[in-house]
Length: 412
Image (cartoon, rainbow, N blue to C red; front, top):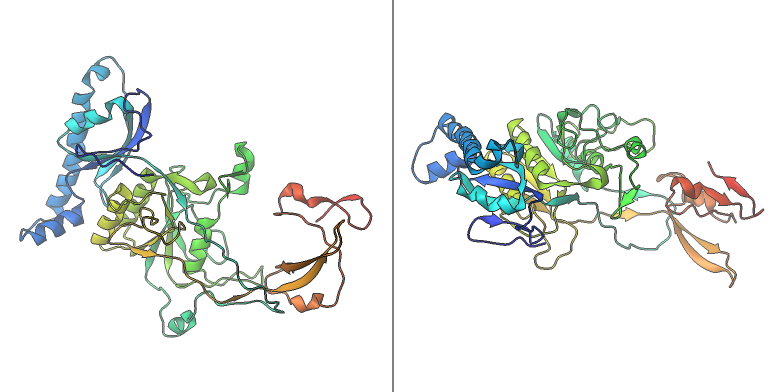
């Protein structure tokens, strides 16, 4: 989706009907820059701006905007009506607010001298890995090198010790054995509390909502997946696949900005970036984005300001391909380290099979049919076995017909 580029400061989605009185969610950017950015800009101009004075200007812009709102909506307030609501305030990586206001009153906000621009609050989504078709060559064992050469860096002492990493994502299962020693805190901007746990299966059961929407499950695991890659400590003894990450000694903080179905709003993402800067993160990781290409959208601006404040920002490039304009915001940020897809060598256990059909036997190339990823697939060699297709493994899929007797039974 492209945002309109209007000279009057309105950067609104074409879907916003500015004649409607219905509330719309927006992000308002103020003219004064966040503290660190303002200090750097002053330095470039040969001026000196102290940290205290820069922060005072930020604080004053919020106070003045609040007073301007009272003037702009005076008639409504006098009639005991409050048509606007400020949802979030930003002062560290972005100077402004997220708020709701009637769509036909959005333009009135430009009457405030504090306002630089007004943007639509857009939907953003996790960036799950894209799986490609690999070799069909049969292999007896499973081997995988996720981080080629990383063990050499660990041997040299580069393990992330003393580094604080903020993961801005769907939350983290901080009870996971590989992660609970690394997890140090964070915040949940979806539920607005200090518990940035992933959206769980039980949450879905209680919600009454569909299990999947847009190809994504209600319950999430993406943030935990990212945390494992980053700082898994390899301490999980309950499985044969413990995970040691790139920086197993790093301290990780979770900022949950994406909720059910792995989706959320730009206003929450900016809030996560803002707090990560305030909390003193050395690095922020963002494997998320929107389906529009705009280097000056608010979350990209927030990433720029975070970098200027001394935070290294690593952002996913997205999964929309390698053509022009496929990069999604905030990966469009000029100051971020925007990372595209990469491949590592993987050998997947496979074996040849035959599927019985009314038209005759059909050859089949089967993958990942063993109990675990590290099981020896050679144990199946030379055997003829009957199998039951349980599809994607959902709960309803496990009530199947026995292929030998035709009886319905429950697979456990």
